[in-house]
Amino acid sequence: MMSAQKTPNVWVILSDTWRVISAQPRHFSALSILFLLPISISSGVYPFLFPPPNYNNNINNNNNNNNSNPVPSQFIIQFIYLLFAVIFGLCGGASITHTAIHGFYGEPVEITSALKSILVSFLPLFATKLVYLIILWLIFSCYGILIAFAYGGLLLCGVQLDYGGSNFVALVVVMTVLLMVATIYIQVGWSLSTAVVVVESRWGYAPLKRSWYLVRGMKWVVFGTLMLLAVPSGLLSMWYSSVVTKAAAAAVSGGDGIWTVISWGFVVEMIVCVCVWTVASLYSTVATTVLFIYCRAAHDGGGDEKAAFENGGGKFGRVYAQVPYNDDAV
Image (cartoon, rainbow, N blue to C red; front, side):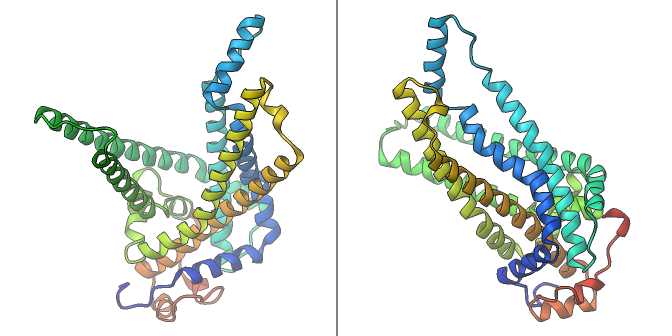
């Protein structure tokens, strides 16, 4: 079906994403402040609660010398951060997807309706993400086992590996790139799972299977859209991590607390990063929902949807207002 139609490009997806958000800016702003902003703030503060090991060793030595209480367990900090991010992330994904679906069809919803959708979608989303992570863990484990067997086979064959040589480094780079490509491919195939859970009331492995089916014929569009939204945020995160690492190193060399090296300039930088992360998360969630609508129309839609794809998409608020979907599932 996709081959006979003109697939909407990345620009069409981003354009419709902008239209959905600009149609209800206060609504999306409220949801972003409620759920996405806390995650971004915690991501900015987390490195200071979980600084580099050499900093913690220095603090622990000072605490032992002064007979003071030890620093809080890093495991507890990680667990609290992970729990916080999961809860707010699932709530944000459910409410924003619910709002974006209705907004795309020209049906504005109240903030209370978006919040109520969390009660319906939270547990299915949690179960789906859990299955998602378990499958990824199994894939990584199998990949690691294959590498271990290959390494053992080389040793049994008497092959001497020069760990500092260029051949070994090239082998490691190739294996890493292959793993990254496989991971990205899987994430692209399962990128619509959140929208499937919220709209079609599926959970567990079913949304992943459904998402894999829907992205067929549009994988490059999905990939391009996700990368265009993720790469700037990822580069900003890398830059922020380097700044935090330098701050921690300065704290270690000076023997002071890590908070003492923070300046007003650094606070401004952190605020900018938090704002960019929040906006990027919002656009990524809405763009994924728009992708879901186009992909579902391409595979399951009728004549009106065919016409939209033959024109390259962009029928916001008109053709797609006629796409049938289950009102009770949203």
